[in-house]
Length: 173
Image 1 (cartoon, rainbow, N blue to C red):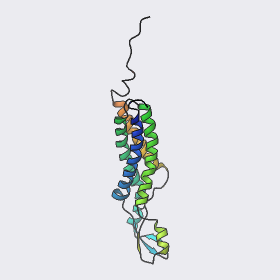
Image 2: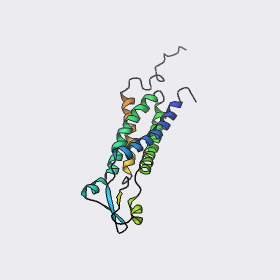
Image 3: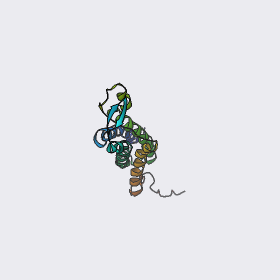
Image 4: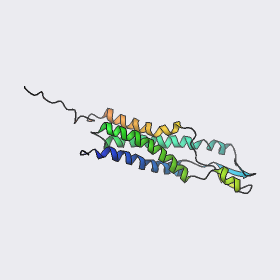
């Protein structure tokens, strides 16, 4: 491995680890579980506010993933200079893995599925709703934001990739 080629690997690993941190931020700091109650072995949201909180899992995931991905993309570009193509590949793969890790960590730390809890709970038991993401497109947010941050630095930086492409004087002969 050439000198400095370790940097794209560090970007990949850093993105995956950051995905775990973002999962904690998403599940523990940003999202609020919707309150609900058990009736007849089923979970029901308490009121209209609880119903609106059910969609916040997806929207808060997108918010945290977009902000985190943008910062991670900028950091990846700063670390991965001189190896732009390898860094680009690392950000694409690492961003996708980070999105998955963020989702896994966030849902693991969040409350259990209320339908499962309600099946064995007595009527009137207060049970929080589960942290979920609806659909597959929210998972594109983190990698897309990371690519946007990476591209912004690469395109705006006057030195990006210039060390290896400096013009050489023609040889006589």
